[in-house]
Length: 239
Image (tube, rainbow, N blue to C red; front, side):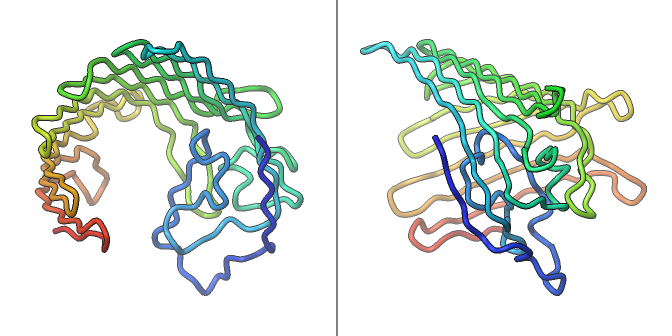
């Protein structure tokens, strides 16, 4: 798979404040995305080529498959803001990839990002899921090295999470997740949340209760209850 992107350099003027594009994650999911920034305050500028090799093996008539993806991004001109976030060594980014095994009601996936020069691990994401739509349980381990996105610093991550999803009826579903920080400097729970969702052809309603355990000098976590309402042709809002 080869993707060519032609874009002018320097498309992010300093006059536009960066409010909603400070989160960035280069991985197998957005390898072939024309713009890897989230939000609307920044766009990924500069011409580049994204390439990868994808392989899939299916067993006909069975819910069994093996999927693999391995790729990289190459820029024609260096981008100082993205050099650390995407692991650029000159014009070549870090390698990203995914290996996934589906066997009946079991799914095992390994996603990674590794340095182009020495293959050092920059991100390891391992997940295991079991079950079907009525009830599905999962376990996830995430390690991600720290990096700079321009002037924004992203802290290292090392955490484990447990989650459950259940399709209660045709329209009602339930989801819950618990995240735990494994870093020695700040070991402990990170977040707990639960979501009850109603969904039909025209609209959806979500009721979410969450508790955050993150803290710093001026913030010690909080508990929130949120309701969101979505009109599928217009968007959504919540409070």
